[in-house]
Image 1 (cartoon, helix red, strand yellow):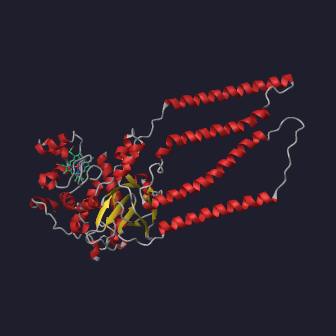
Image 2 (cartoon, helix red, strand yellow; image 1 turned 30 degrees about the vertical axis):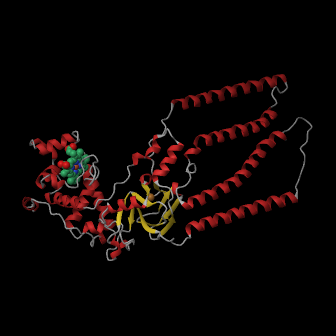
Image 3 (cartoon, protein in one colour; image 1 turned 60 degrees about the vertical axis):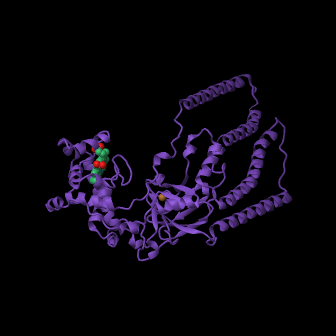
Length: 493
Ligand code: HEC
Ligand SMILES: [Cu+2]
């Protein structure tokens, strides 16, 4: 079964690869064996393996150090058959992985497997994507008590309905109203106002500590933005509450009070209308100007002194970050060069690109240092949203965008603040800043996110030094796996 599916997936992937990148893949890694190995590896192996960490099967980088190539070929073609020959290595690794059987790949030739090995041993390691499961794990279970309340509600409603219809009939028989419905209806308005306000208040009291505002923003411009938000909310909120109170209290105050009462007729008052047009207009225009100024202050700034540039590259469905290496400069890019391992289209003709470092699925930023985040997209519109930093900018294919900001709170510090706010919630012990895609960009949009690490300059430098630039890795001498003679003979059939 699995065998069949793998073949199908492989065929589909090949088509996509050929259509998507076939025409410009030429100038990348020169070795066609490496490229073919990459395709085969990505099509067949990545569901269970990663290069540098255990997934369902072991990490495969360095496999030639622990296994002979001939063994690898036998294993990949049919590991069950290899185990059946009582091969001790095969049985040991099978048992170590608790007997999870690996798929047999009878469709791969020896040469295919050799290419896969070349790819595995020479591919650049990019950091793993954050696993979807480590976020949002505490969705409350659907509690049964909720259904009891729903049933109870239906029951009460039915009961009320019944008693009202009885009351109706009795009134008719008696020829007079038992209940003054007009008064009841009027009274329900202020009751609704009080009950509704209490409900809103209770929700705020319970959940406001979970909003992004509870612990403040982690960036410099975020403070200004939050301030603007609160000023706007205070003014519009005041007017909103005032209007709601009047709307709910007046129906009670001015209810119909029995036969013969007449409503007070008040056609219009130009003076009042003049003021309540002018004042809101002035207030709204002021808010608008205030908002525009704040927005321009965030989006229209020049590159500040001491700022460094990074590039965030979006595609379905992950984020890749490019950092300038020791030279502090990002090299040029060119979409024509996208293909194979050069999936962000770095232009290696520009020497500045040689030390650029790529990292998939994790963004590192230096605290208190302004950063210019340049955005690019490969396929459709994405949007980089870092809620706790109040950062958001679209990534549009063909249109470079950018946002300049300064993170001011390290991950550690923000975690501490959150834990102080929620001492019993273990989620916050491992909390991380997140960058989320904020455009519905396709079926797996929901998992298009990455962890953002905000750290000191020293920590950042240590981390950056631990990564190799793809240019260096690709141009390192190719490790030729040993024991090639037997392979070459069989590969020709
Ligand atoms: C269905 C999941 C799955 C797929 C697909 C898969 N593997 Fe594996 N692989 C495993 C598991 C699990 C093990 C560990 C041994 C065991 O449990 O049988 C393993 C072990 C291995 C080993 C031995 C590792 C060691 O340390 O000795 C190699 C080599 C290997 N796989 C290569 C590949 C290659 C190459 C592909 C793609 C052509 C591939 N695997 C596809 C699950 C898989
Ligand atoms: Cu997206």
